[in-house]
Image (cartoon, rainbow, N blue to C red; front, top):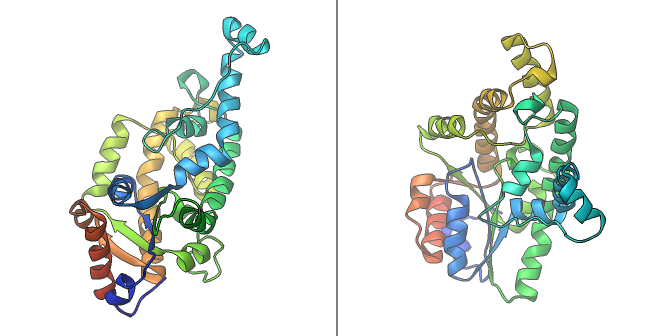
Length: 288
C-alpha cells in the first residue's frame, strides 16, 4: 500500500499498518501505545504461539512432565492438565519450544529435531501473516475497530522475497496494510549482540542460512558431532551473522513495498495521532 501524498493516507477512514524490524526497535511498544487509542493490535508471534504452534508447545511440555513419575501418574489419570500461558508480553513458551541445537547436557536438542521445529515455525509464521486480511475484517465487523496494527515478528524477512511482486505474504500485507520498517540506530546491531550474549535466546533461521552456518560453525570450532556443539555458543555466533543477513532484506522490503522510519522517531510516538503524523512524514520524504 503506497500513497501519492501524506494527505491521501490521512484521509483513509480506516487505517491498517504492519510494523516490521529487528528486535528492540519498538514494534510492540508502538503497537501497545496506539492500542490504547483504539487500534486493534494483532501480534504475529502471539498468533503463531496460540493458533498454529500451541499444540506443539503443550505436547512438548507433556513429554517432559511424563519423565517425572509423580507428574506422569497425574497426567495418565487426567488429574491435571497442562496449558501454555503465552501472552503478548510473554512469548517464552514459543521460544522455549523452538529450543537451541547442540549438546543435550547443556540444554540443547538434536539438530534434526531443531530443523523440524524450525520448519513448523516457518509454516506457522506464513499462516499467521496471511491471517492479517481476515483479522482486519474481524476487528471491524465483530469488535468495531476502525484502525489496525500488525506487530510482526523479527523473522518476517526470512519468509518473504521482496523482489517478488507475487510473494504470497507481501502481496497480502502490501494490499491490506501500510508496511512500515523501523530502522534501528547505527549502534543497534552492536547493542542487540551485547544483549544476546548475556541471554542467548532461541531464534528462527531461514533453512538455507541455518544449514550453511551450522556446517560453518562446526568447521570453525573443530566440532565433529552435532551433539557436541555448545547450544549457547552457536546461538551467539549465529545471531551475529543473522543480523547482517536480515538488515538488507528489511531495507529491500521497505524500499520496494513500504516506508521507513527510525527507532528514535518511534520513541517519540505517544499516541495514535503521533503515529499517523509519523507515517505521513515518511510518505512525504519517500520518492514516488
